[in-house]
Amino acid sequence: MSESERQQVRRLEQAIRELLDKRAPAATICPSDAARAVHDGDGDGWRALMEPARRAARRLVSVGEVEITQGGRAVDPAEAHGPIRIRRVR
Image 1 (tube, rainbow, N blue to C red):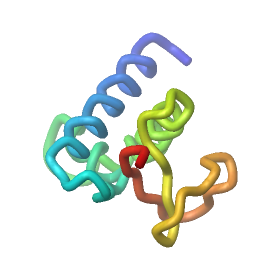
Image 2: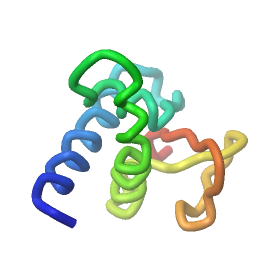
Image 3: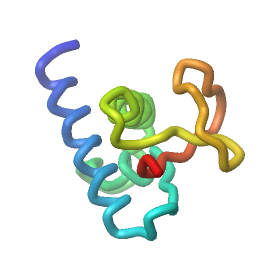
């Protein structure tokens, strides 16, 4: 991963933390919320940040800060396919 990609993931991690801080303790966010928060500009360029946002969420899972959920249940990030949500660890 290049330095610019690492910086992007760090910005996305921070966006995930800030978005979760603004919500109830058990609330979730979508990776697209973080992608939109980090995207510089109008339009749908945030879509290119979706995989980096999922990567940022997986890294936050690995350090014990968040959980990735599907159907309201925490799932192993390696086994998550399709839409996911992110929440603070309970």
